[in-house]
Picture 1 (tube, rainbow, N blue to C red):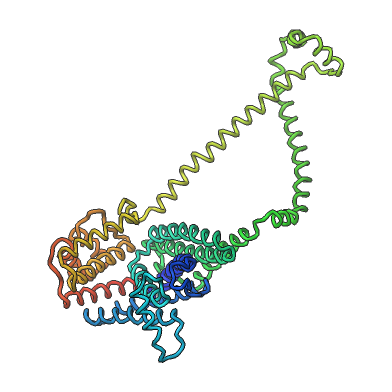
Picture 2: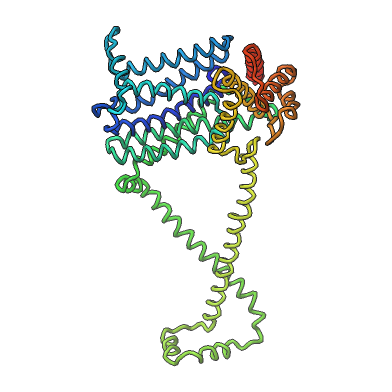
Length: 491
């Protein structure tokens, strides 16, 4: 996560920022519901300070979880420390939002307690601080358990973008003074999302490539990526903000000299095309002239002309058309134009369908993840599966330490499978853990004992109702930390 290599650290920083932007928009909408708050007074927080605060808060919590995971604390100490951090975060946010000023001013604590008990009267800022603390910890746990593969990050980016467009659009519609704020929040989300998606894609492409540096990301490359993202998002914001009739007319007026050049060149290009067409028609006429040598064209044309009314013949004679082959030439010209249009249409069909189909097939083969995108890749389905699995664990182990140990073992194995997939050894759908063990050994050579220990513990927890002890769990964590650090060192 934040203590690993530069690429993963940048991805997690971007993901935390994306989460902060979407959450901030939701909170801004919540602040506008004055009936929800006690005395109709929601916390007064400037939007960008809210985003920055949630972003920094999420990063701090992710770092805390990362450091706790890497520590050698016992299971009991680990849980007590985590519980203490959650409580301290809630107290700090509740005190800050309550508006307490003095160091020894504990009136906010009494007000928060009373307002929390009497929640039907409205939401107190201190109570909201407690809720916000639990929300931040929940989001931090979700982010630390994230699969940073390209498919997962791309799906989260699209889902967050839809939520942000809907939330920011409604916020700007209901509050005209926040239109610019909504635009800049959207720009910030796009910049962070493009950074995360680009890094995940390059990381996925680098895995298994010969001569690749893997997840190593030089500072220069990172700056190049940020420059490209800044240019793309900056141009998008500039075009979006400047999209008005007056600005568009002013922009087009700057291109008047260019239109004059195009008009001048267009005239000569048209004259040149007419000259070329005249040569082609003359060549076609010389080509078919021998074929018409034995045909009395004058008599044929008189017969054709006799089919028209006398008024049209008189009209044609009065116009003084001296060339008797004008009708034939016009017919040849029409046939040439129609033939050229047909050939051009077929050529366009070939370019836009046949070659495009081949190009799309190549793109799809590149975008295919190492794990097949079946129903399990659906976010809603994955969430339901996880809830179903947790319900099974609760039924097997009850609510207690054994349940937390079982969930920890399953998370360790899931993260191990993710690391192996990034190294080019994915687990097939419905593949038993014991059959997948040889692939894990190939992904982490020289760690057979640790891999067998993690696999056996996972099978005990997942397929049976045999819990793991505290000492076993501590050893499993050490095994997983060793494997993860080994992968990071090699990359």
